[in-house]
Length: 121
Image (cartoon, helix red, strand yellow):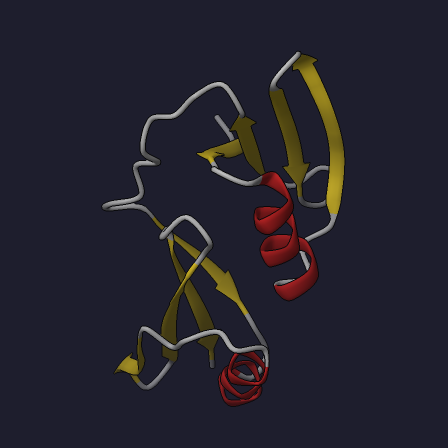
């Protein structure tokens, strides 16, 4: 069994696409609207797991982000921290290094979902 995608319900598709695509650099694989008022964007590379963003304009319920964390690997944690700061993204926690082989920090996406930026050494 292989992971296909992770689904995130978002309040504002444009804000979420700006964050995941423009800021984090995750490619938009496909966008579509299965019915009026619902937009879906699949982010990621062909043949790899995706992040599915779903925005339902008719749903006024609160987005549940508690307990969700998504990790992305980078080559340089220091460069990534500087980049985030230059874009006005607040570093929520970190850098943290629980072992000599890994170092990471946390930021939040537009809906409060925790994003972990990781450097594996």
